[in-house]
Length: 408
View 1: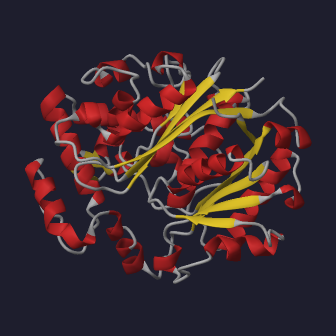
View 2 (view 1 turned 90 degrees about the vertical axis):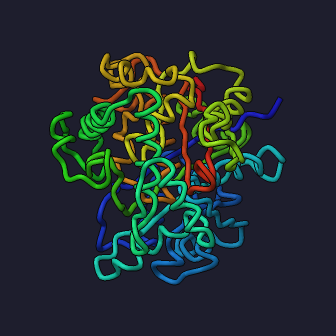
């Protein structure tokens, strides 16, 4: 049995193209809001975890990013840990903070993720910043995998990620009869929910037909089915029961029931029982002592709309091959059986890489506190987030699944 850890305060900035902001200003905005939400002061923080992935490539700040960004806020002298684990960095930072608290090292920690990715004068750097998410020494192997799944070589000057997702999407279509319209239905659902999220990058609801009519990126994805490049930050104050008693108390706290990190395995391409997302979900459910039937609301890492279909299956929310019909029935929309991505997901809320995992938990904490306004999921008590990143072999390189519970 592990000791309880709680989210006492949490925040996220508005995501989008924030041309006048910097890593420092975004960090300050998120951290100060999280402290206020927890009823905490800077002096209460005993350690901090800082999630960021792109600053070395886009600005050249290779090391001590967290120490530099947090110093102007008065967060000096305490342990600061810099975390980079691709798109799963934010949730990996939380996991590290959980271990620190449960080890008895302290009672109150800060977890913050931030990314400044929109640089109109540096398009080549932005494009290059994504290349390292796969094995740069084995591009030929990655391209061979794409071709084996029915894709084509995207060329040396283009990110491989949309092509990787598209190849997997086409394989899912061939295996289960999933259609491009199914992916459009996912995107329509998320853009429509995202229109209710004032912190999201996009705020325009879209019909399935409108999603289908958008510019084609790579079949089967149109632009509306793909996450945009974004700036933004998110932060949380996590604490032990003793730390919580020193802050706002249990009335708005959310308990972390499970948090599991796994890395890419050696599975065969068609061995989906051992998919990284399923393995992470199984571990998190075991930690929480629950199964998927207990889940009320979910955030998944929909870097593309196909990824949401895959992760719904991995989390055990639907049998493989049934997600399309369940989407058509509205099971995963607001008001449905198990709403997925009520925030709008990555395709609508945005995807500032280092902040994304924490932003998912911001949405779920807001839901569990019954503070989500027009996108509130009625009676939400158990929430699950899936946050994956990078690509290695035949799947994501890292995935974290986190389970939260309303504490009071």
